[in-house]
Length: 259
Length: 292
Image (cartoon, rainbow over all chains, first blue to last red; front, side, top):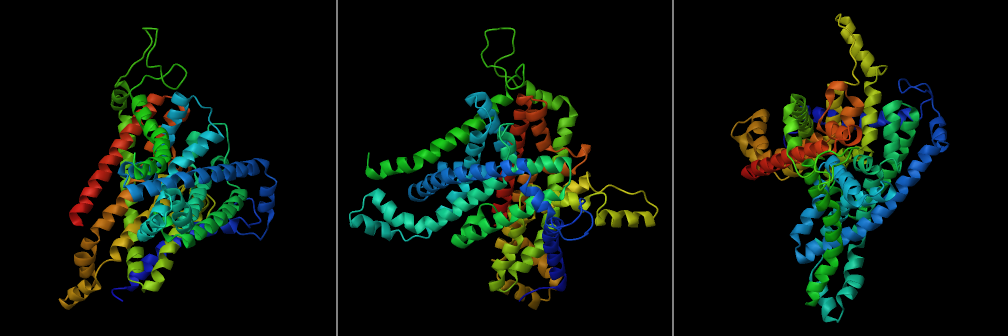
């Protein structure tokens, strides 16, 4: 191998340490027997117990799960349809529209949706406004995953299906769908993860109507630093990790949109 | 209508209409709002009003207002400098990582890439919170820094709620956006070029400066755009980790929408931010195309 200078190693390892150390500290202090995130004083499950009895936190977690579930279902359907339209019919404008929310800074999408909800729809901000906002940005991620799967298919199987007398719906139901199913599930998991983690867009579209986990974490860290935040962070990290791993196994291209 | 055509409308229709309503229309509304008068109780004034004395219709007043007070331009300039600084530091940190991955044996590359992405499976706020702990006044790092400052007879400093804290977290949050496009580019380089350079007597540093780096410029531009664009829109990082002087464009926008409730001005700021971002995206794609 070429030019793997020791300095290169050292610099790269330092960067990896920079990436992992902060999170390791968050996780470690979630088991720390001290109110302050300053020194290790001993092991405890205490902060996880506090978490289980924190009613606001549980309500927020429930809301987040519900929003993630509904928005991931809708965006999986819309994203898959968009992917098919873009792949089979070369719909460039739709491609642009699907990818714009993926690329634009979240704050811009957040405020324009806020304006739209209040000024045009006269909608009371709450669960519905958040779910719709999440669908807007997660549709693109589903579309990326499904498009990659469609591009990998051999077009001749559709000719074969048609020759055998399959209607377009039958061809989708029995040929396309089973083949792109892993990508659809991967896209859905990605959409779920993005929804559960989203802070900025939710911040602008939730109003006072609904509290989600990231919004709750935000209000907690703005006022006090407590190891309870470390505990909920650790659990959230585990959940997202599991989802992303599953998505990456089902369809390796899924992560490309986000990173 | 042919069957294929009907299929096209059936498949494309729902996502197209949804995004038309939920993306295109809100963007147009923002543009219109930026040219409206503020309403009496927040929000926007109605466009058509029976009361001829009330302010209504479209205006460019908010845009003029932006330039009437230098403080807004100053925040924009500071944000752009902050984003440029973040991009530069990300580039310097990401380059060795990307280069190491590209020069690792093929089997190990995917693992090393995954290791870059993995920390970012954690929530955005958690990553900011981690820095609150590390830079907190009682933290080991704070005590170390202030201990060293004390040895040299300097006054102690606060690491948290400073521009340095904001910059650190900005780099931390956006680093993988720089590593991945760089790696994608570096991976494609032909190792024979480096052999040739070596045979011609170039040392490691010369090989880097005259072969690897110039070839990687498209990756550098792509990564820079991916870091610069989201950084210019952040508001949570300066709000949580910064001091009063560390306000960025995102904070200004958030303030107008949720605190001052001057929506036309908030919309104006959003439109100006969008314009800057589009300009930068266009410039980087041009620069990338020249070097590709």
